[in-house]
Length: 343
Ligand SMILES: *Cc1c(COP(=O)(O)O)cnc(C)c1O
Image (cartoon, rainbow, N blue to C red; front, side, top):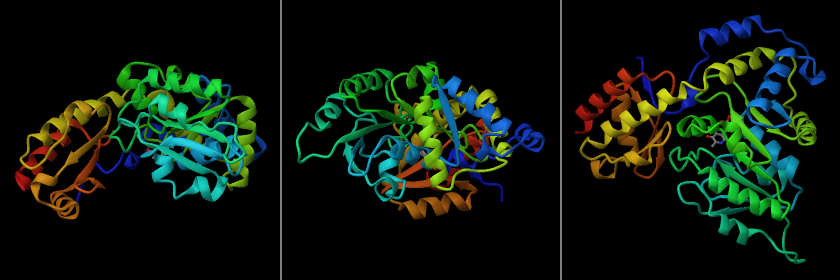
């Protein structure tokens, strides 16, 4: 069966253009710094993100963890949002690898309150850990792809700079925020020291993320990547689709956002389902199914039988994600099918 797959934007396969670029990529040993395609990707990413340098890493998780390892020492405290990906979904890596302790702050729609961040920064007391890093996430996955306002980022950055604490952005879906607001990615990243962006989500590359920051930060990050076993050799075959992701796949994210609104409006009209349509700012839809009386498992099984895949999120909440392989026709088909099953 050909499923309409709303589980995640990570399911997007490389385009024909990407596969051709992979086939034709000029390669070398990237641990020696000799892969021209990787070098081109890293230079392009640094420029787009407004940073001095960038590093191609295996995944978003690896990028975030290398950032924490590079910024922090064991025993430091990392301030982050209570439902952030780094806190919820990275297997406790920040504790296991960097030996830091996390300080989760409950945000509103994924955005931490700058004053709460200011209060959470530790004073100079022998009992306290050092505040080693502040992590932001934009768009915020668990909040349903919500955009953290650039003014909030600016306020937090100013507080951090005043205390000499670095700020890292988990920008797995930063380009979704940029396209939805019409504000360039580098405008967002001017208020962080380092940023991780995923090439393998909505941008459709098969593998990889970018970590960007200052020259001295990336030099140290490159060493951490090697320590973690992430120093790859003729990896230009994977960097080549990454270049296409950055050059040709960003602006089309707008289609995913339009389709997400369409799906949200359709779902919320089905009895038993609720979506807060104005909260759908990018490509993630959180659908409340509690009134349908179905459990997440029951709901997802019914959908699957009808050829539709989505993902469980919280109790009674199902996540739908739009992406390049879901057309507006497929969204209409899905709405009709779900209406027939549930309505
Ligand atoms: C997907 C995601 C990551 C991790 O990326 P992987 O490549 O799956 O490791 C990090 N942060 C956010 C917000 C994500 O959505």
